[in-house]
Length: 81
Length: 192
Image 1 (cartoon, rainbow over the protein chains, first blue to last red):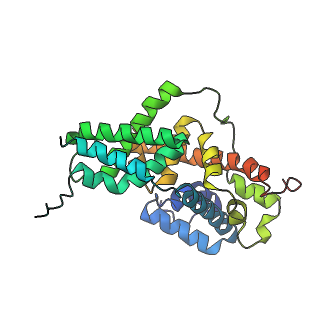
Image 2: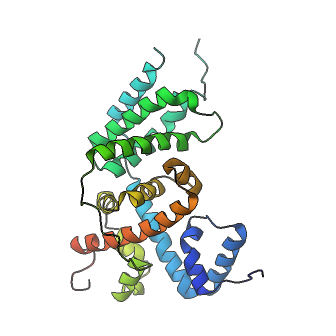
Image 3: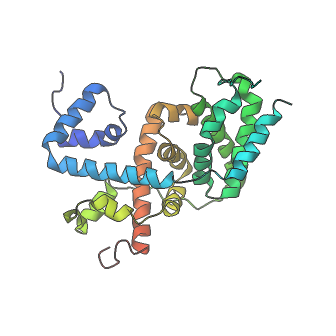
């Protein structure tokens, strides 16, 4: 039987995969349709999405020290000798 | 005459990813000198094993696999016991529930209200407390936009294992972040 809509529980079980776009196109559409009409699930989804985005942005804020770049470039040059 | 740029050489393939590779190493080891050593060790291994790389496949995943293997090798030698968090049962939507209990959700953006004042080091400290199997997949996930399948290839486990470790890793990380937020006054102790 083909599912034509998800319950809150079914969306809840898929929210991480939905955020990561790891669901099939059909599942993505079903979750999106549910979120369009459910304020409670949308609130949870928005919260989790913001948490992930903030964590990624803050963890990724790192500069590669030029000294490290120089050392790696030297290693890469050595292979040609 | 200038020599023509060859995009298939190790130099050409690796150089664009050095920044994110260093970031990944730094978040795993939480020490700049150790991260530098790990990256050099992985670069040497890539030089030695470059002939096994199949042109046209995903170089970034190939190099991160080497980097992760080097981390595991190094980590086995230097592992300190008893530092990781207890797994236990962690409720779903941990921060959502905590902030709901404390009435944060009257504001425009409760997630950002809690997280905006946490810095990368504090988050990395929380990530570092996760047990290894969760920490490695979570760090790959947070530091670069790998798919579950790519993380599975890098770590050498099935995609379903990546999915379950990431899901649990996120919950554990949220649980670790909450007391840090409280400790740093982001959430007042009376509210917490």
